[in-house]
Image 1 (tube, one colour):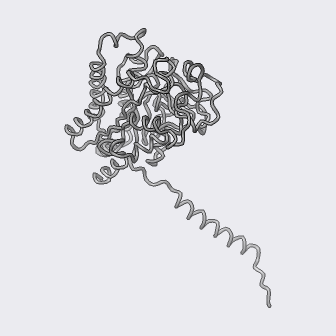
Image 2 (cartoon, rainbow, N blue to C red; image 1 turned 90 degrees about the vertical axis):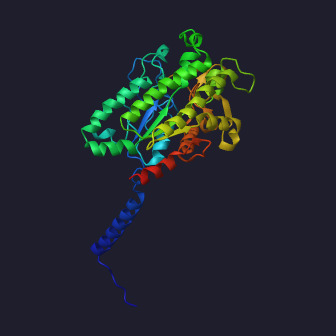
Image 3 (tube, rainbow, N blue to C red; image 1 turned 45 degrees about the vertical axis):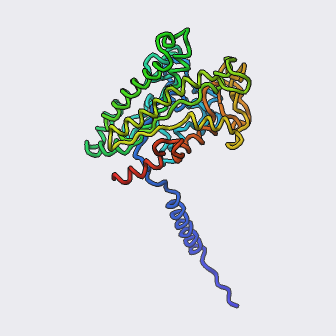
Length: 376
């Protein structure tokens, strides 16, 4: 048998060509599909804030450990151990992490995939959260978007901009602070003396509607409007001692339901009055309530206390710098006195993206994508 020897240079060339082919194939398979929405713009409070409060004169900050303990890059201003709902939703949509509006690098091309305007302690009402210091209220967040809009105008013509805005997604997560840091704080605010619960819910919806219509007039056509979760079940409220054992604070949840019912009705009204636009009601209350009522089904074992904090329910003092959080964070529904863990945020994002009609009304975000494709 004749033994043939292949010259070493030829071997190297063959190996190199094989590697190149493999890399090209792998790379082509790894390319992220074109985002279903050209951009996502987010307005809200600490549930979805990703750093806008970092440089404000505010007590509502989370740019320190152990916040971000499970986030790649560490503390960022996210009020969570890891990713927010928006981070997970962006991943589902093929979008990068959104830059915080207040970050100095959020200019030029960095705004083209969207911007996050959410601010911890912010509310629908301008005065909400003032007991915690500076914050960007909903009306200010809308004004901040108008600043971004001027940047977008410098990067595309009017026709392109109009299509871009019409196909972009707006997510709004607000209202919790209008109760926790307003109506339920009579020592700081007079709202509970001036308004009945029903009248207060009407007041919130009226202010909310005004800002939604402003965003619509600026060109947006796709809106996901999340309602308020069961605030009576968060560790902060359980630590007041007003709830029976293993129960939530009933009257707080009833307040929230008044707002949520009106928000769903508003969605019907907006969809009827604005053909060509889509307004979706995200049932955060129902989604979180289901997790709290059936935690084992979702892989949780701790529902009534915070992973990071001190005092009753680990929530009388919320997570402070260099606190030692729980080790089994994925078993907890709540990260601190007010906010869900990364594990819960992932579930909520998936429900927003592909949830049933009871979770996203009248459609989910994935179904909104089909409408985007039809209009292209």
